[in-house]
Length: 149
Image 1 (tube, rainbow, N blue to C red):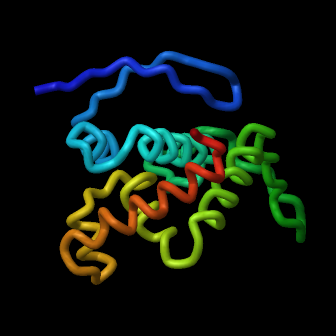
Image 2 (cartoon, rainbow, N blue to C red; image 1 turned 30 degrees about the horizontal axis):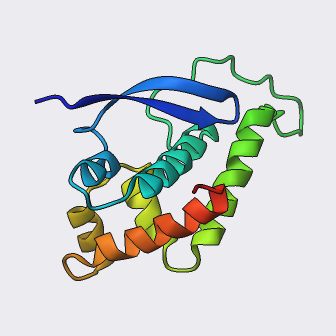
């Protein structure tokens, strides 16, 4: 069963309408079942958006841009990241710092990597059902960072 919902998302470029399959994201799954509030969901979506815009995730495909031309004794020239990537990286780093120590792990696993709460708890060595409570604390803090009401 596909649970498609149309949402209005506001990011740095303005407002846009997106179609979300709630069965795909652990955050949307939690929100659909009342485990996180809409404010917490929005905070998580903003963090994930900044994570993706900053291109912080691992590359999963081959890079097709031209190989840099090597100069004798010099390192290849690096490409400059875009200003949007830099701003997104700063927002992401600021949000994770605002969450506080010990909360970045659960935020990254569930929000950015799309890992479910059960596997995240197991990987972190936490007891069952502890992840939801800690995730909600972290989402509240980054909601404050993003200025969500």
